[in-house]
Image (cartoon, rainbow over all chains, first blue to last red; front, side):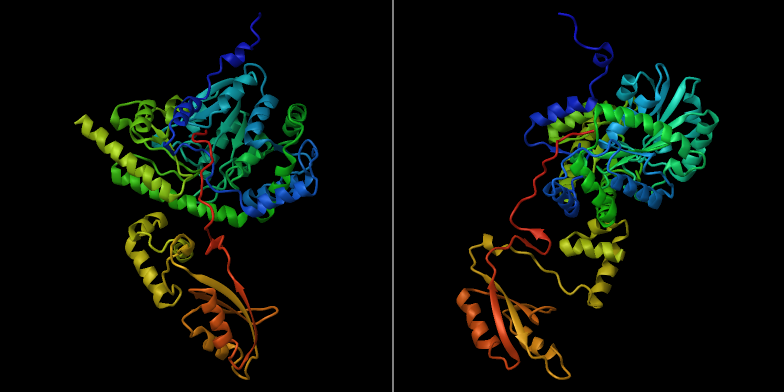
Length: 390
Length: 160
């Protein structure tokens, strides 16, 4: 029989997280700090709206781009948060999670051989989606000494005449890094100078702990060259509802909608009704969750300080990214030993790019009580490693 | 800090002061001072323990009693409320809007004890017009805490 598979797909490495996931799942009593989704339930009034829509029999396809009601709420939300206006009829597309928007956005923009700049460490899908869309991923390795922000110089150095798109993943998973307005202004100059486009993945936009999240679309001249991607998973604890969206210039959104229409039809209808409720009446829930995350974030940073573990202070998302270079082992070795000896799962930084070597991603989407137990074990483990070294 | 501090101690009054300072991002002394200030201002009125008596071998019965009363000239409902709340078996008294006036919660050892209290003490008060007693059969949620079910983390253990 002939080989049924496409070389391009077979050549893509499986996610580094997957391998680790299999080991963790084998261990019944392992506790995990490896989760990339909120621990909160979706607020009840949002779930209730989903249930209500089912009761009412709203179980049909919506328009391809999503319920008009929802798209209008999305534009109001972005106006309210970012002060930028989008046309609900032409510049918004409701997708199956932010992930779909990343995939079809790249497919809509890339010609074969065009380069996509991907700052790493970052979420695992940018690189494979670029390859599947026929593009060439070009990695920009972010540095701990810059608090894992993207600098104008790093961007400038990575641009070639084939560069088409920059992916901007802030607030960042796995580092928790954010980009402040001044950082965005600096890179915006470079972007405009080289006439490239931006895919800004702002799925963690509601989870920042110093100032309000700033989007690159707020910077002059950037709205017309940016696809803004966001969704409901992280801000409203709605991961399983699979709902996100993309906002951008009409010409890009129209082509994305075309792919979406053929591949997906429309986002899940129940989720769309629930999302309308989330945007209308969910501000207080977001605030409450943000406050809880911030308390946990402070708790972890303090614990690291007490055990002398180096960690820059992250101001976004729900991850901390401590450095473990002092122990002279790779992230994967550390994570494996920690799991075997203390039964706690953390994700090796290398799951998010080679430059994550020497770091761990620790999620604080857990209650303080759970964090306390896990961090107690980390302190024991770290002490033991230090004793071994002597 | 006040609002956030209250939200935490309302749920967990036994939380360690040092930990409280860490998660609020302030100094421990500030937490101590703020708590003391709120105690003296009467904002924090006490620190209680939530007990699910069902799980103990101790028998307890609670009831909600709707009370209709005649308000008194110049005093409104305050006098009669005071008469009622002075009984130690009364755990709370609320003045409420709607079809009756006072909602009284009672805790006793047995049905008999509670019905005795209602018929002997409560109904015989001059200004009490009528009462309706509702015994609590099961507590599902109390003080924002769900008593019936334990939290279970059903998320996948590791996700990107």
